[in-house]
Structures are given as structure tokens and as C-alpha cells.
Image 1 (spheres, rainbow over the protein chains, first blue to last red):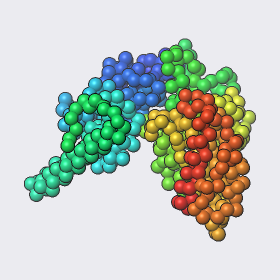
Image 2 (image 1 turned 180 degrees about the vertical axis):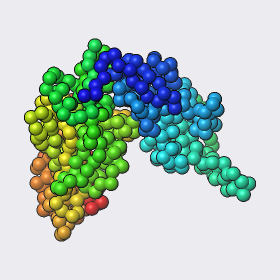
Image 3 (image 1 turned 90 degrees about the horizontal axis):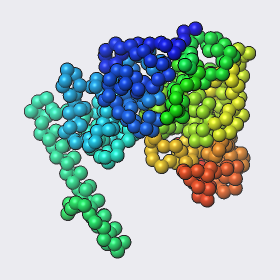
Image 4 (image 1 turned 30 degrees about the vertical axis):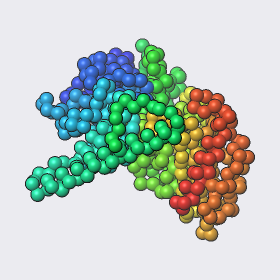
Length: 210
Length: 279
């Protein structure tokens, strides 16, 4: 029988690099990554698979590394957030996150990036619903998700390679921005109607678009 | 220091279970959350390296979902509409991360009252396949799950697969609906699964509905009321409070008892109505 005893070492690949971790086989992969390999990009959340902060790719599929045993990674390929940038240059998804402002405290960001990486590798032009499905397992307490989802859906839209494609692309971008402004204005009007109907004055922390 | 066994042959795994009590580990999506804040000191039998336990297969009379087939495998498998309810459960359980590692067989073995796979497999009249050094046996989920996190699996037994019988009628489908506080990463408050087989006149020849309580249960009174009815777009209206009496709603943080009887009836009616519209 091929078993692994308490003193065993586990060999696998992390971000393309072969590693060996000498630790109990039942150790959570998340703890091995952070404490044994020094890869602290994968954050600590609930440690129970309920928040997605510990999300990594295992053979290309997103998993909660807090629910994977070290022994089960033997011979397999792990990707953490540290593996997304190549030679110090942020990849397109990471640049899109910056452009969209899709992070505040950053605790969920590694998990969100990893989940989005799995999605975009399988579906380079995801719909909004696809993004929400794939990222539904990572919780964010800061952003309200809108910019994260917009980043995921917009990441597939490339700037056109030629001038011939530029006018249509700019036109689509303007139309999307206008739709967002109209939606926000509608929500503002609806909120003010509810305030008047309820007979109460609510404090609004920022002015709503007219 | 605890032992961690990861055999590559089924005979070795079964022999290990005879020698001493071991905790079986597959996807880990129930094992690790149950041990947050406690030392990982179980003696473990990790079955993830066992061969021939990944592929969903069609066999004479049934489909076989082996122990290491994940929820994602279910969602992507080319299966009949009879499996639509199981596919919906596969895409709503936990999150994408949980679906990529968790398994229907593990879901049954954990036997949580909120196990999303259980009502679906009840509705599909599935059987679990258990093996030991003494041989193998099958039993229906209703007999396998005895209570809250309590199953009939013996210490020396391993669940190898769950078998879903093929429908007898040509028109057959299944559906699944789940009520939870949010879309993902939520323990279900109520979930309902329904399976219908209809004959050539559109009459319901067989129906099974599973809904949530300390142990998921079929609703035999409702099933009897549906048999022989036509698929006339009104099956959902056949659901009454009387049919829900088989349930014993949980008194917990998700839904206190006074309101707990309402969601199952509404959800059951909606499940039947949506299923009927697809057939």
C-alpha cells in the first residue's frame, strides 16, 4: 500500500516551481503555502471554506486551500496569486482590477483574482452572470462587488488592435457608461420617492445624480 | 502523531478499515470545516488515490456515480434530463471551490440535514453502494441516513458509489430548488427536489418529492396524490399543508418553527410547477 506516514514530505509544483514540503500530510494546503513556503498572498479568512479568501488553483480548478490536505497535492500543480504576474509585470486581469478600482482592503483580492483566472481561462468573454457564478465563492466586505464583477466581465473586452475597430469599441464603452449613469439616476429617484412615501428623512452620505 | 493512509488499491483500503477505526477523507469539504480551531489528529484513510472512482458511467439499468466524482463532474457530465435536478444541486451547493472538490457520496456520508444532494437522490430513488472485505451491498438513501449526521455505514465499510436507476417512462425529468439566505456559501434553509415520469397521455406515472427536515424525507401522501394526474400545468396546486405533515422542521438559526412550515409547501409547489413546464 502506498501510504504517507506522519514524517513524510510532499512534492508538488507551485507557480511553475517544484517544491517539497516536509510536514504532516493532513496539514491544510493553505498553511503549507503561507507558513512552510512563505507565500502569504493567499489570505486567512474563516479557514472553513465559507469565505474564499484561501482560494488557489489546483490543476487549474479553483479550490479552498483550507480544505485540501497537503498529501492530496502530491504531484499536482498549484497556482497562487503570486503566480499571476510574470517577471514582475501584472497580468491583464490584475491591470483591469487596478483600472476598475476592484479592491479596497485587499483581503478578498487574491481569492477573487484566482477565481477570475479560472473563469477567464475557460471563457475569455464571460457574461456578467458567468462572473457572478465563478466569483460567488469569495466574499467581499468592502466593495459591494460591482467593480469586481465589472472588472471580470470587462477583462475580456480587448482594445482593438487597429484604428478601424476603435470607433465601435469606444462607442460600446460610452454606451455602457451612459447605461450605468442612467441606472444610478433611476436608483436615486426611487430612493427619494421611498423617503417621501415613508415620511422619514434619511441622511444621504453623498449627493445622488439628478 | 496520527496516521494518514493514502492507498492506491481498493483492497488495501478495505483491509485498513478492518484493522482499526479510520476517518475517511475524499474531497475534504466537510472534514476540514468541522475541525476549525481543533488539532488535526484523526487517523485518516484518504481515498483520493484509489483508481476507477472518478468516472460517471452508464450501466444496464442505472447510472453509477462513483465516490470521487465531484459536483463539478456531475454538472459537466452529458446526462439525461432525469439528472437536471442533480445538476442544479451540483451548481448551487457551496461555491465553485466546493463543487470542484466536494462529492455527492461525501455529501451522503456527512448526512447533514441540509445536505443538498440527499433530497435529489431520494427523489431519483437512488441506492448507495457499500463495500467491505466481506463483500458489497446496496441500500436506499432513506435507509442509509438514520439521523442528523448519522448513517448506516459500518466502521469497516466504504461507500463506493451511488446508483441512480434509469427512468422507466420516456418523458422523465427532475428539478431542484433551494432556499437560502444568499445564492452561494450558504447552508440551505429548505430545499426541494422532485422527479416526474409521465406516460404517453401526459399522466404522471411516478413522482417523488424530497424536502428538508432533520433527515430529508419523501412526501408519500403528495406522491400518491400526483400519480395518475395529467401534466396539465397545475401540478403545483396539488400541494397542501397536509402533505407537509411528514416533515419535522428544524428549530435553528436559519428558520424558527412557526414559519418553517411555509417555505417547504411554497417551494414544493414551485418546484413541481417549474418541472412540469419543462416536460
